[in-house]
Length: 124
Image (cartoon, rainbow, N blue to C red; front, side, top):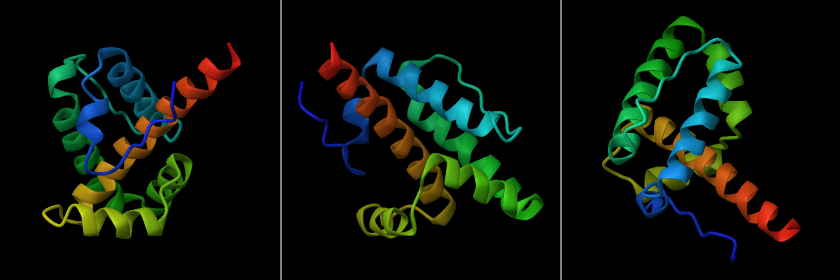
């Protein structure tokens, strides 16, 4: 198994595999849940990206106004960097700032899932 090359513009390729989608959704729910922010997932794999993206946009919007420090703690936990945000802006020019942040959460947690799977397969 090769280390996956996940990019902002090929995320849908990886989100078409049910087990990866479910693990990614679980990772997002875990990361946000650590800070008392509820993200849910219906389990509908085909609609996973828009469903999670929309919820994340809504939660990020609320916490930008309501509790900025908590939002920053979540984004730190997810490990989103300013460089990745800038890169996503270049690669996804049709997304606004909230959409970029939500996308980056999905993107980073997907990468965590894929890296975990890659290194697990290497140790077996």
